[in-house]
Image 1 (tube, chains in turn cyan, purple):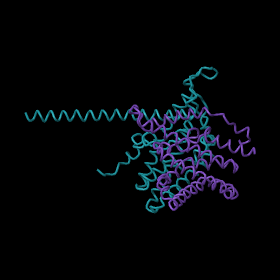
Image 2 (tube, chains in turn red, cyan):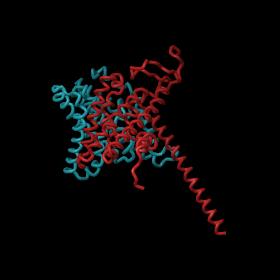
Image 3 (cartoon, each protein chain N blue to C red):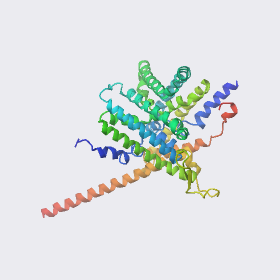
Image 4 (cartoon, rainbow over the protein chains, first blue to last red):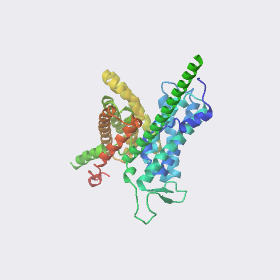
Length: 240
Length: 200
């Protein structure tokens, strides 16, 4: 039973089955703070992926060197180094992204997922596995916050705007719940742009996931019961 | 006199209007994690209060008198997180030595505080302020944290006995409650305009 998980499983698990945000419910602070626009959520996710990938790589390289008692401060220093790297890079090359994320780039240091992966995975596994795990967690978190941001931006502003944060693509706006530019028509609900909307969207998303899981569990149980009944009936038939 | 009034107003503003959890999204992990028992929520709140104040007291002079003259502003995140981690450790030792009963109530939350965004968030946002304003920020933010985590725990205790849809049990309903609390706190917006007191 205790066999090592395959490389593919290490990478794919955090994308859906063990998604850091939707299943583990970690890293909720940035998931609510930067999800008012789809673009800044994707940017945050990519910065996060870089940090978790690099810190997993370094920590798994150092896993035999770091003493057990002071491991947390060591991990934090490694993570803080990469957060500083990300901060300097993004403020130079993507200043719009940096200013839209604000203090939450620095707060990647205290993101529970980064430290959690260092503690739970990178400190016990090989370098390649840790890199894959970091990449999987980063991308899993990216799509999760992008999904929340999609709902919040469409409901909150009625439009989807591109090119505001990633200035290298041309700026354009997709009207979804509102009329084309110039018309007053809009079905947007500004509440979803505020903090309250963030809590509500994440809460409802988690409830939907829980409902799907409950349904799956119920079906599996029913199936097991039916199989048991069929087996019992077969055994009874055999006796007769 | 005016300075005192503006100091107090700034504290109230950071505490209820620009609340740390409901408007600025700091510290939601610990808010969701420990917020289902009244006693432990008070313990967590007080521990965060103490560490935030200490961290703000240490980090502001450290940044303005050492990092800025040395031209090493980019080291802020690493320095601040090390200060916070060692402060948490020191507070742990101190409480353990002085009062064992307090350590037993607070002790389990201490390691969690290092990874609480509120502490680092306050230290980082204080860099733009003068010393008085940064103290008001730290005090107001940590009082706001204690206030909201306490109210939230009281609501969640009631929720435990209520008849919820199965899918909403646990964290989802907690987030919905937090959203409703945020709407309530939004109603206080604009009560104090810090600009008129020369604070922005």
